[in-house]
Image 1 (spheres, rainbow, N blue to C red):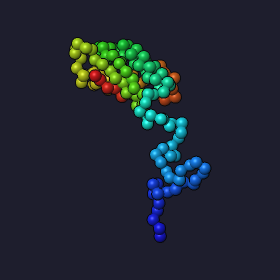
Image 2: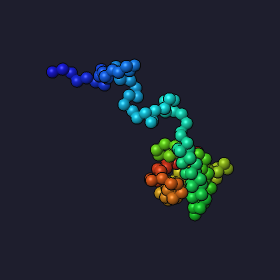
Image 3: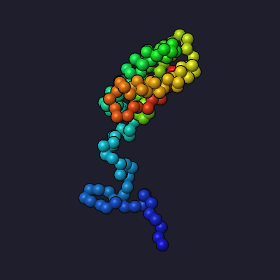
Image 4: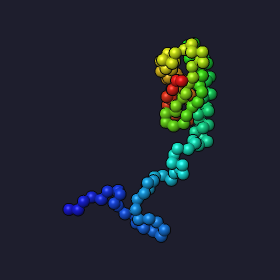
Length: 132
């Protein structure tokens, strides 16, 4: 019996102007091909979603009964799955970071519900909060 060929040793069928070896990115969906290696700026739709989520969270936090949540500021929302939400505490240091993290964890379901009601998506985005 012969050995089973690995991906690196397998050959492609050759056509005019094509290589006969597998390379990085072969077999991937070309719609997701990025010339910057995937490290570049998010697309327009992702930036639009992040802006909508930021606005929805700002409104939802200001409407909370919890004074700690009311005093938090949504600084940025970064695209991806899950969406990363950068939240800042007041500059005067009146709210410790640990308290803000705890309150956001408790209110996470409510905040996701508010975001889902505000954005037009099939599924509510998953949110991860980073407190600075």
